[in-house]
Length: 437
Ligand SMILES: Cc1ncc(COP(=O)(O)O)c(C=O)c1O
Image: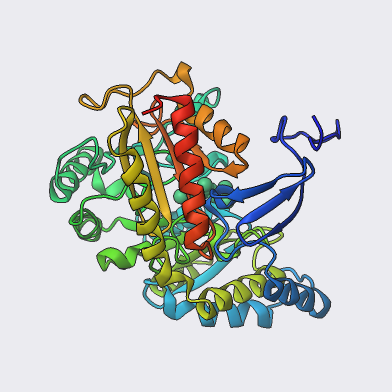
C-alpha cells in the first residue's frame, strides 16, 4: 500500500498504516496523500494542536542553552521556572513537581512515594487500591493497578496484588456516590485498612471505560473515606489534566484536593515525552526526613521537557483553551446526540469538556454489550480511519474485559467546524459498521 511503513526493522505498532509526513493543528498529512483529522489527539494526548511554532522555538532555545544534565547533579532554570508557574494551577497543597517521561512512570513514582511516606512515618502500609476498569499504564507496577484483561493476559503471575474496589459508572450502576464510597470503605475495612497505602483512580474513567463521569457526590465522599483512614488519594489525571475536561485539573469539578496528582499527555501535548508526579509538600517533606526518596530515571527533570511544557502552558493560557473546552465538548456531544440518540446500538453518549465517548450495545433496553469477537470498537475505528480520521477504541468498556466504546479527544484548539466534520465522519462510520439507522 502506498505510504505504508516500509522498514522491516521497526517493531511497528502501525501495521498497514501510512507514514505521517507533517502535522498542524488538528490535522495530520500522510504519505498516502490524505489529510487526517486527529479526533483522538494521538492517544488523547495533544492539547494545543500539532506544529505550534511557539513550542518549536522553546524546544530549540532550550536545546541550545542546556540540553541535558542529570537531575542528581544539577538543577535547571527550565525545571524551576516551570514548577513555579505550574504550582498555582494544581489543586494539591504546597505542591512539589517530579517530572518524568510519561504517565506510567508518573504513576509508578506516585505509588512508590506513597509507600515511602508511610514507611518514614513508621507504618508498613503497602496495599494499593484501584478501581474496576482502571487504566494507569503498562509498566509492570501500574499494570497491576490497571484492570484490563487483554493487557494482563500472560502476565498474571506478576500481578494480582491491588485491592480492587468498584468503578463509578452511572450508565450501568444506579448507586449514588455515597453508596459507592460506603462499599469502597467496606472493602477497605475487610482488607485491613492499616495496610492500605494509597487509592489511585482516574477522576473521569478514560481509556478502558470511555469518558465515564461519576455521580457528583462520589469524589467528595471518596476523599473523605481516604482521609479518615490515612490512605493517600492519588488522582490519575494523565488523561484529564491540563484542560481536557474544561478545568486545569478534573479534581476541580468536585472541589477535592488529592494528596498526589499524576499527569502527562496534555502537559507537553506530545512535543516531548513527559509525565508529572505532583505531590503535596507535606508528603515530600516527610519522605525527605525519613531518609529521602530512592527513585529516579535518567531522563527525569529533563530541561527540554520543562521548556516544552512551559510553552504548552503559555499556549493553553494565551489561546484560552481550557475554558473553551467546555462549550466545544458540549457542541460535539449535542451534534452526536442529535443524530445518534435513537440509534438501536448507541447505548450512551457521554463525557466532559473535550473528552467524549459513545458506547455501543447489542440491546439498548438491557444494555447488553456486543460479543468481543464482533470487534465493534475496532471496526468503527477502522471505518473512521478509512474516512481519514483518528479515534480511540475502548474495547473493554463494561468491565475491563468486554464492551465497546470509542473516545474522541481532539486537540483543545479544535474549531467548531472541525468538530462538526468529526461528528459527521463518526456518524457515517457507525452507520456503516452497525445499523444504517
Ligand atoms: C489515566 C491514564 N494513566 C496512565 C496512562 C499511561 O500513560 P503513558 O502511556 O504515558 O505511560 C494513561 C494512558 O493512556 C492514562 O490514560
